Length: 206
Image (cartoon, rainbow, N blue to C red; front, side, top):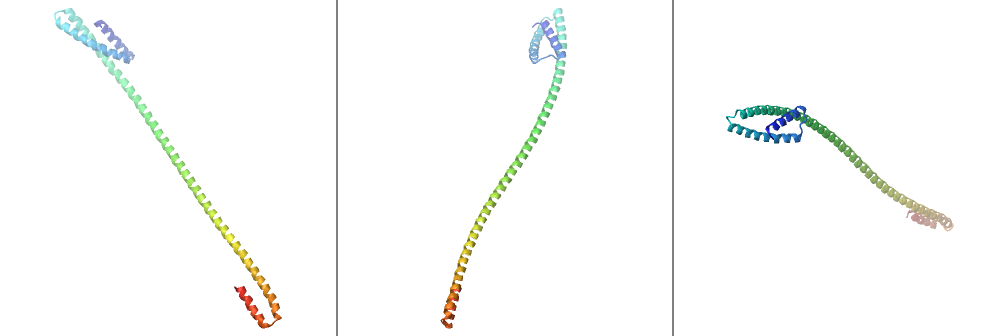
């Protein structure tokens, strides 16, 4: 790239910066061309040093150096401005992105806490339900045992009642037998009647 092409390139870069059209690939090309231009400027400097008596070479070199310096300063200034604006824009974007992330995180934590609260309530409800059912089963078992004991007692009472009835019937039969024997013994004498009465009373008491 000769000096004239470098000047055109710098002018194009300056215009692109003014219109905000600069891109990443163009920035990379910028850096490469700036490095090459710096090397050629060093060569030009050496040429001017070797031809110190040539006014034409020195005139062109000084003019080019002045123009190149002015354009470089403008480009650097624009780059700084562009960098600042991009940095502020990215910083603002990052700020809002972080803020959104924090808000989403808070919402998620709130939702998670609500879910945990609902989960605890559900667990407590299930535990209470299970405990109630256990108590109901225990009560049903106790009622069954009480009912069974009551049936046993009732059966025992009924058995005892039957035995008592049988015993009362036996006593009644003995009483009837006594009356019959007394009527018979009345005909045989009072002494035998008293002994028979004592005998029957002993049977009844027994």
